[in-house]
Length: 475
Image (cartoon, rainbow, N blue to C red; front, side):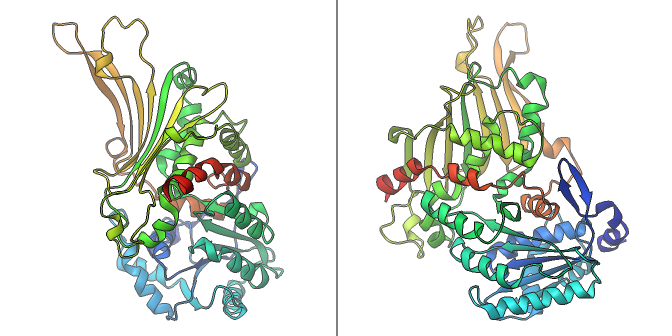
């Protein structure tokens, strides 16, 4: 039996659901997913493959779902399908070619400008035709707009969606938009962008996506911290010496230098991915798992961060960065940064949170490293062998492990540092870990905003002091 047939037979087990309070309620009816920027790299490499994997797992039943691509490029439906076909099959998704073909047949392409009515009127006409063909019940049709586009065109695209592509008929249930980072260059531009979008859509309709919040071990942080009794008394300034959140890539800009040079490593990685991880590591226990309660606690962390000191920032640029033809010859944009953040509250006073990010380094990894204080009255004199650490490896090869001191096997009373290791690849053999974009797109369909950035969180995360350092010291 092909996986496409399996999807159809198992469909009832995987109906889309929406979040109401703490409960998920099944949703039925026509679902239109519109990928704007459909001919771009993000859509081809991330968005469409994520939709395909959701389709193969039965979350996007073909009797309800249709996918629309929209971009300026003038191509046919089949040309778009051929462009994305090669990105759909990966090591974790060895689906038969007939399943790929069935999925591709769900995709229709519409070409048009991002700031003119004609293209969006045509897009709305095609969506409405799909909704009518599905004999949608009144109030059951859903529209999800995924903006795989640069932030500069968000305002015009959102205006066009609002004017011409909203669920206006009696068939309509909801309209939601997904916007990608970066959400502005600094506090001012982020606020301006938020205001422009906020004038057109209500906050519950806006999903600001940061794909790190969809990673398996990032989503595991709340469970680790608040479902394990032995962590509760240890997770504070009395026991923890420092927290390191690290992002390393072993390659450079690889032709994306023009985009990267506009933002730099701080805006591209630290203020988005690493700051979100910091919030989950440092936040207090929410009163419930409701998305708003979790996001409230994240905002409190951001509000407690002290201004960053110049002497606690290290910036660098890898040799050869300016050789990229898309990078200006005299660019001083940092490709490496280490920044120390300090949280002024009862739990974390005095504990440095060290955020490191860099490109073209000697290894690729993303990890959280919680380093504990030395044992007082160390009778074994084992400080030189290292401190206790709890490490969460986000990528590659998801794992978490604890470094601790044990007796060296043998007749002597000597110590050695060892590890308690939970490697996901070994422990969960045969289990496929979903990609971050799969989780987050499914969350948008369900109406669960827990793993998305709220407007006030965005505001407090745009540290004006951080940007002052980058713009005056580096540029």
